[in-house]
Image (cartoon, rainbow, N blue to C red):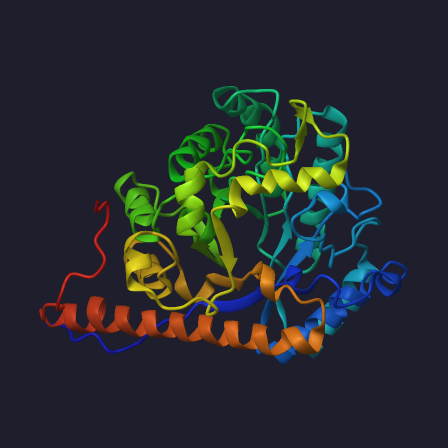
Length: 413
């Protein structure tokens, strides 16, 4: 009998720079675009992390969606109005080295299948710039959405994905990068009734998309940046999702994690169900999308009427809510990842994303202890899960000692 030693493995904890969009005021960062990265690297160091997910976005002056229609302000910490040159690379790398800070990936969250060909081209070109910046900064991936063509149904979007998104994955492959899709369905992206506005929202679709990718030689480029908040939004639980992927032979698809929760409002579900508010939201006037862009923010009532985002650690521990899939069971989330997924744990990023509305404070000194607490919580949860897995699945298993109890069970109803 070979006795396995106790050797827990921990993930790399980081933070998405969209957690504080206005760390560097726009009047300072617009004329000096790399100042925002420098100040965020310093801030992340204060928060106690060694990695940042670098948020990129079309500058407000170039974006097709007005700021007043966004549920969250634009976070273009990485400003790509101009290409990321060697000189810019040298400056940013020096700052990252000073603070011992790594880049997990570059995040650009936009609709890459936009129905308007000119806007699609603009977004595609920006994504390629983001890829080039990721290479210069030594990142292994870009992170974003696949999106949806609003003029097509879901099956037609699979064809559009094959025709239009595969070339983008080939661009990633030529640069040695992965594209990691975050699975948010983005229900409030557009006015009207469409709820699934990012087609890569759930395991069944991930697998269908990956089969298309495999056919074109870019299977290794398409991965999922899993965020449990979106699972809660759709009534799913992490363990069952991971088990489904394993059952189907696709438990290699998860390439990284956002750590963001969701707390379901039982009263909102009673009133509207999991489809959210379907009528009289305020985004439509006389049955047509409102001409006032600020009214389009009301499209997010498809989501916010029934739930609220959680910054990890800010929600009460509630075993009943865990069993009802109404909030994230963080410990089981991290444990299930180790038990069911094919991961290189010590090289997997666990990125804290902050979208808890009541704590979205654009004041560094007020937000700092909040983020410090959430990051510390995230790290300790991961450490606890790592210790449980090492003890139960490795040490005890190597000696033929059974684990007590059952834990959370998949597919349970």
